Image (cartoon, rainbow, N blue to C red; front, top):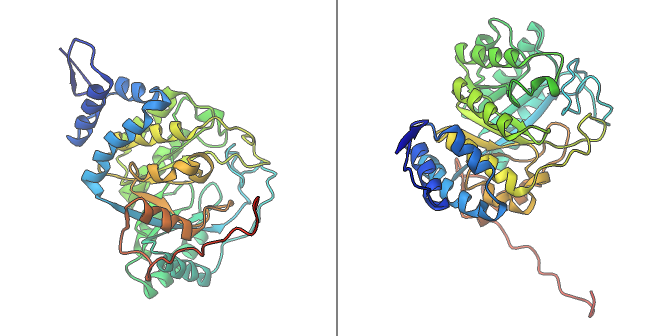
Length: 360
């Protein structure tokens, strides 16, 4: 018998089911499942993925039951970014055909909040392109947030404005911002392969500043950029050290005009195993399926809900998402419920289309 990462193993070889069960029990107990065991899970054959989802879903259900939290994104400032993040359509070197605009006005903040409530979203995520906000931009966002909170004090506001300077987290918190998002995106060793204009340490520092400033830390990762299994795990453990309250998991949307356009190395099964790893690493945190689920999970999106307890509803920053009505139907059909009750009204059946000919 030996112990690794807080998990005790018998000397004889375990069955797949027994090994998976020990991983789940470790996570449920709040222990580190063990890097080697998580690497084993990542490398499991596709035909075992459904078993993994079923087993790891116990961790999800233990903390969150059948609830799914909905989040709505608002791109409050698009394009015009001096950074060179290779995955991003708003980056300096991107030639993607996206709109570019300065920060939107308070009325747009409020309209987005109203839309969020209509869809059953309890969190509005305000995202701005750029290296980091100026003091003027922080004041602008603060005024917009104050307007939103004056109309709806219950809605959560998450800001994602780039690298923070001293005192900016506190200013945002005073205005009513609840959380701050800044993703690590990948491992420290792989970071230079995806960005040259800031460092992995810069990102860690901003998450720390947000947390020290009283904001709920939201930080996750982006996969499908050519990273190895070791990078996936390095990113997971780096995030675990930051102890975020919410962990968004993105899958690369390979947008034309970006350096990573055309890269398509993910499968639905691979995405599900990555989600399983992060649920095991973060048994009590909000794990969110973020950008790219429609592209890479495709028809297996409902299975992702057995691992994650949160999704974005509607569109992303510069790309269209699945229709909100389809998201709500997916949640209901999979037997889950929207946190906070969801939108009012019952779902109606789609009209039944009749064939008009033999080969119609």
